Length: 108
Length: 114
Image (tube, rainbow over all chains, first blue to last red; front, side, top):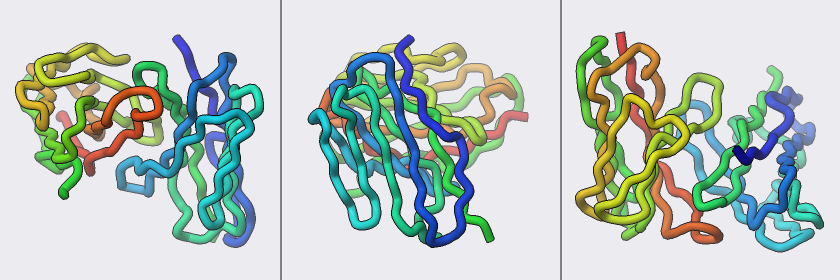
Protein backbone atom coordinates (compact mmCIF):
# COMPACT_ATOMS: atom_id res chain seq x y z
CA UNK A 1 0.00 0.00 0.00
CA UNK A 2 0.92 3.64 0.00
CA UNK A 3 3.70 4.50 2.37
CA UNK A 4 5.60 7.45 3.60
CA UNK A 5 9.24 6.83 4.39
CA UNK A 6 10.63 8.67 7.39
CA UNK A 7 14.36 8.97 8.09
CA UNK A 8 16.42 8.61 10.14
CA UNK A 9 14.98 6.11 12.60
CA UNK A 10 17.04 7.59 15.43
CA UNK A 11 19.12 10.71 15.85
CA UNK A 12 21.45 11.27 18.76
CA UNK A 13 22.42 14.89 19.35
CA UNK A 14 24.16 16.93 21.99
CA UNK A 15 21.91 19.45 23.66
CA UNK A 16 22.13 22.63 21.64
CA UNK A 17 22.73 20.87 18.32
CA UNK A 18 20.19 20.87 15.52
CA UNK A 19 17.90 17.98 14.56
CA UNK A 20 16.18 17.18 11.29
CA UNK A 21 13.77 14.43 10.24
CA UNK A 22 12.59 13.81 6.71
CA UNK A 23 9.46 12.31 5.19
CA UNK A 24 9.42 11.09 1.61
CA UNK A 25 6.66 9.75 -0.61
CA UNK A 26 6.68 8.39 -4.15
CA UNK A 27 3.32 10.04 -4.81
CA UNK A 28 2.03 13.58 -4.45
CA UNK A 29 0.55 14.23 -1.04
CA UNK A 30 -2.54 16.34 -0.41
CA UNK A 31 -1.23 17.42 2.96
CA UNK A 32 1.29 16.41 5.60
CA UNK A 33 0.91 16.49 9.35
CA UNK A 34 3.55 16.29 12.06
CA UNK A 35 3.08 14.83 15.52
CA UNK A 36 5.30 14.54 18.58
CA UNK A 37 5.18 11.71 21.08
CA UNK A 38 7.04 12.16 24.35
CA UNK A 39 8.42 8.99 26.01
CA UNK A 40 5.50 7.19 27.65
CA UNK A 41 3.04 9.64 26.16
CA UNK A 42 0.64 9.85 23.29
CA UNK A 43 1.06 11.52 19.89
CA UNK A 44 0.27 15.22 19.90
CA UNK A 45 -0.48 17.19 16.77
CA UNK A 46 2.11 19.82 15.91
CA UNK A 47 1.22 21.22 12.51
CA UNK A 48 -0.34 20.62 9.09
CA UNK A 49 1.13 21.70 5.75
CA UNK A 50 -1.05 21.89 2.66
CA UNK A 51 0.56 24.15 0.05
CA UNK A 52 3.46 23.38 -2.25
CA UNK A 53 6.68 24.87 -0.87
CA UNK A 54 5.00 25.84 2.39
CA UNK A 55 7.22 26.71 5.35
CA UNK A 56 5.86 27.15 8.86
CA UNK A 57 7.68 27.93 12.09
CA UNK A 58 6.88 27.27 15.69
CA UNK A 59 9.58 28.85 17.84
CA UNK A 60 12.64 26.62 17.21
CA UNK A 61 10.77 24.20 14.94
CA UNK A 62 10.67 24.73 11.17
CA UNK A 63 8.39 22.62 8.98
CA UNK A 64 8.70 22.46 5.20
CA UNK A 65 6.58 20.91 2.46
CA UNK A 66 8.41 20.26 -0.79
CA UNK A 67 7.61 22.01 -4.03
CA UNK A 68 6.42 18.74 -5.57
CA UNK A 69 4.47 17.88 -2.39
CA UNK A 70 6.32 14.56 -2.18
CA UNK A 71 8.52 15.30 0.80
CA UNK A 72 8.55 17.21 4.05
CA UNK A 73 10.98 17.99 6.81
CA UNK A 74 11.00 19.07 10.44
CA UNK A 75 14.05 20.94 11.68
CA UNK A 76 14.68 21.80 15.32
CA UNK A 77 17.28 24.46 16.05
CA UNK A 78 19.36 24.21 19.22
CA UNK A 79 17.68 21.18 20.73
CA UNK A 80 16.64 21.18 24.38
CA UNK A 81 15.80 18.31 26.70
CA UNK A 82 12.13 19.15 26.28
CA UNK A 83 12.44 18.19 22.59
CA UNK A 84 13.13 14.55 23.41
CA UNK A 85 10.61 12.18 21.89
CA UNK A 86 9.56 10.62 18.61
CA UNK A 87 8.44 12.78 15.72
CA UNK A 88 5.97 11.31 13.24
CA UNK A 89 4.83 12.56 9.88
CA UNK A 90 1.48 11.48 8.49
CA UNK A 91 -0.59 12.25 5.44
CA UNK A 92 -4.29 11.97 4.82
CA UNK A 93 -5.59 9.49 2.28
CA UNK A 94 -9.04 8.78 3.65
CA UNK A 95 -7.12 7.56 6.69
CA UNK A 96 -3.94 8.97 8.11
CA UNK A 97 -0.91 7.11 6.73
CA UNK A 98 1.90 7.31 9.27
CA UNK A 99 5.63 7.35 8.94
CA UNK A 100 7.62 5.11 11.29
CA UNK A 101 8.88 8.08 13.30
CA UNK A 102 12.27 9.55 14.16
CA UNK A 103 13.39 9.28 17.74
CA UNK A 104 15.32 12.28 19.05
CA UNK A 105 17.78 11.30 21.74
CA UNK A 106 19.87 13.83 23.61
CA UNK A 107 23.31 12.56 24.55
CA UNK A 108 24.14 12.88 28.25
CA UNK B 1 -13.25 19.67 27.78
CA UNK B 2 -11.59 16.36 28.58
CA UNK B 3 -10.76 15.68 24.92
CA UNK B 4 -10.22 11.97 24.37
CA UNK B 5 -10.25 9.65 27.37
CA UNK B 6 -9.48 5.95 27.56
CA UNK B 7 -10.25 3.34 30.18
CA UNK B 8 -8.60 1.40 31.62
CA UNK B 9 -5.09 2.88 31.71
CA UNK B 10 -3.43 -0.47 32.31
CA UNK B 11 -4.58 -4.07 32.25
CA UNK B 12 -3.05 -7.52 32.61
CA UNK B 13 -4.86 -10.42 30.95
CA UNK B 14 -4.26 -14.13 30.73
CA UNK B 15 -4.24 -15.78 27.34
CA UNK B 16 -7.79 -16.50 26.24
CA UNK B 17 -9.45 -13.87 28.40
CA UNK B 18 -11.59 -11.16 26.88
CA UNK B 19 -11.82 -7.47 27.57
CA UNK B 20 -13.20 -4.22 26.21
CA UNK B 21 -11.34 -0.96 25.94
CA UNK B 22 -13.43 2.17 26.08
CA UNK B 23 -12.71 5.41 24.29
CA UNK B 24 -14.75 8.55 24.80
CA UNK B 25 -14.47 11.97 23.16
CA UNK B 26 -16.33 15.17 23.98
CA UNK B 27 -15.37 17.15 20.86
CA UNK B 28 -18.33 15.99 18.73
CA UNK B 29 -15.92 14.41 16.24
CA UNK B 30 -17.34 12.18 13.54
CA UNK B 31 -14.26 10.02 13.04
CA UNK B 32 -12.68 7.75 15.62
CA UNK B 33 -9.76 5.36 15.41
CA UNK B 34 -8.05 2.58 17.32
CA UNK B 35 -4.30 2.09 16.96
CA UNK B 36 -1.77 -0.21 18.52
CA UNK B 37 1.84 0.73 19.14
CA UNK B 38 4.42 -1.91 19.91
CA UNK B 39 7.67 -0.95 21.70
CA UNK B 40 9.87 1.24 19.54
CA UNK B 41 7.42 1.06 16.66
CA UNK B 42 5.04 3.37 14.88
CA UNK B 43 1.26 3.37 14.95
CA UNK B 44 -0.79 0.70 13.24
CA UNK B 45 -4.49 1.23 12.59
CA UNK B 46 -6.73 -1.54 13.90
CA UNK B 47 -10.23 -0.27 13.13
CA UNK B 48 -11.86 3.06 12.55
CA UNK B 49 -15.30 4.63 12.36
CA UNK B 50 -16.56 7.42 10.13
CA UNK B 51 -19.68 8.00 12.18
CA UNK B 52 -22.13 6.59 14.68
CA UNK B 53 -23.11 3.03 13.77
CA UNK B 54 -20.27 2.55 11.26
CA UNK B 55 -16.97 0.71 11.56
CA UNK B 56 -14.25 -0.31 9.12
CA UNK B 57 -11.11 -2.42 9.19
CA UNK B 58 -7.69 -0.88 9.31
CA UNK B 59 -4.27 -2.38 8.74
CA UNK B 60 -4.29 -4.98 11.56
CA UNK B 61 -7.92 -5.87 12.43
CA UNK B 62 -7.54 -9.60 13.17
CA UNK B 63 -8.38 -10.58 16.74
CA UNK B 64 -10.26 -7.34 17.45
CA UNK B 65 -13.82 -6.14 17.16
CA UNK B 66 -15.24 -2.65 17.55
CA UNK B 67 -18.53 -0.91 18.03
CA UNK B 68 -19.68 2.70 17.72
CA UNK B 69 -23.19 2.74 19.17
CA UNK B 70 -22.90 6.36 20.29
CA UNK B 71 -21.07 9.13 18.50
CA UNK B 72 -18.90 9.92 21.48
CA UNK B 73 -17.83 6.35 22.27
CA UNK B 74 -15.73 3.81 20.40
CA UNK B 75 -15.21 0.39 21.96
CA UNK B 76 -12.42 -2.05 21.14
CA UNK B 77 -12.94 -5.69 22.08
CA UNK B 78 -10.52 -8.55 22.40
CA UNK B 79 -12.52 -11.78 22.40
CA UNK B 80 -9.65 -14.16 23.18
CA UNK B 81 -6.47 -12.33 24.12
CA UNK B 82 -3.11 -13.60 22.87
CA UNK B 83 0.42 -12.61 23.95
CA UNK B 84 0.91 -11.03 20.51
CA UNK B 85 -1.71 -8.47 21.51
CA UNK B 86 0.51 -7.10 24.25
CA UNK B 87 0.84 -3.48 23.22
CA UNK B 88 -0.17 0.09 23.94
CA UNK B 89 -3.57 0.92 22.48
CA UNK B 90 -4.38 4.47 21.48
CA UNK B 91 -7.74 5.87 20.56
CA UNK B 92 -7.98 9.02 18.45
CA UNK B 93 -10.67 11.20 16.95
CA UNK B 94 -10.92 13.76 14.18
CA UNK B 95 -13.50 16.08 12.66
CA UNK B 96 -13.23 14.49 9.24
CA UNK B 97 -10.72 13.52 6.60
CA UNK B 98 -8.28 15.41 4.44
CA UNK B 99 -7.35 18.73 6.00
CA UNK B 100 -9.84 17.99 8.78
CA UNK B 101 -8.07 14.80 9.74
CA UNK B 102 -5.96 16.27 12.54
CA UNK B 103 -6.19 13.49 15.07
CA UNK B 104 -6.50 13.97 18.82
CA UNK B 105 -5.25 11.08 20.89
CA UNK B 106 -6.18 9.64 24.23
CA UNK B 107 -3.52 8.79 26.81
CA UNK B 108 -3.40 5.12 25.87
CA UNK B 109 -4.12 1.75 27.46
CA UNK B 110 -1.17 -0.46 28.27
CA UNK B 111 -2.16 -4.10 27.85
CA UNK B 112 -0.08 -7.06 28.92
CA UNK B 113 -1.23 -10.53 27.90
CA UNK B 114 0.45 -13.36 29.77
